[in-house]
Image 1 (tube, rainbow, N blue to C red):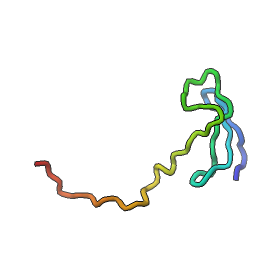
Image 2: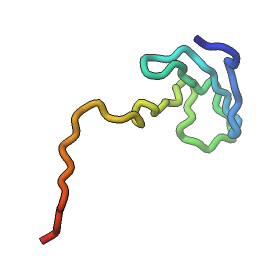
Image 3: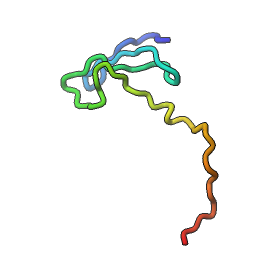
Length: 73
């Protein structure tokens, strides 16, 4: 599945690596080394940077009907 890049360096100086992903995301991005000058608390060595694409998909559950002609009393 992984083709091409295996590592990259972010603007903050942290080095990330690309690994096989899990269901819903084909690639997992993992912080391999954190830069001493990085101020981001989200960059933790050996932990993945999560992909939130699944949260942006349309819901699969039925939503309650939209109430029309709502007026405050």
